[in-house]
Length: 236
Image (cartoon, rainbow, N blue to C red; front, side, top):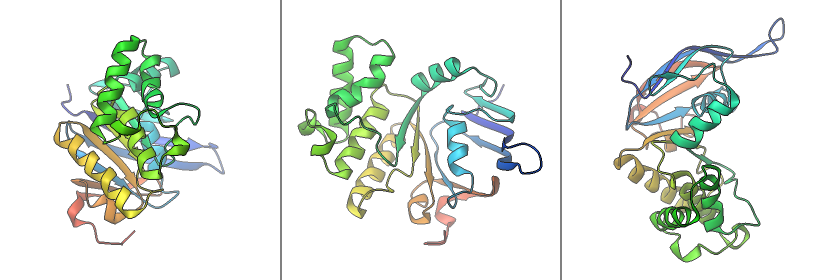
């Protein structure tokens, strides 16, 4: 029995099998342990976002095995994957993905609604999460009334409200100014210090170096797996 939180074994994701096939993931094998802060680094088109979709149970591999907390999720149905995502993974996206017509609090509560959580418990968890990211004074504001940095903090609150053990962050600073980006990275570090496992997808070495470990992907293959501090600055 594996003690790894995440264990990916010889995973392929192949589009258009045959003569013009594209190997978005080309035989990747990786392990990530509980409580790690790992950056997945690569250019646009390297396969890093496909890999995050796989790790986040948003997609399944063409072949290979993916063990999440000891359970092979590679062959699960969409409903089973949805259940795992709901319980174990919080997502933070570059584009925030907030619903414009909902307030910050309602946006944070939405995934909890899908879990069938009672209203009072939803409200309490949403308020706690928004306070946690410094947005307690903006709970009743809609996304259009918030800056990009504030919207991303609401998105982080939404990701952490149900207290999932894993946070997947896909270019979470990509649409932000430098100061807002630094605030987002600070929150991710604090979550990691509290025991959450953080998987950060980025094309930017300066962001990746703030993780503990960096896995570089080129053309769907892992080409290096090092301490993040060993990455060269600006060498993307």
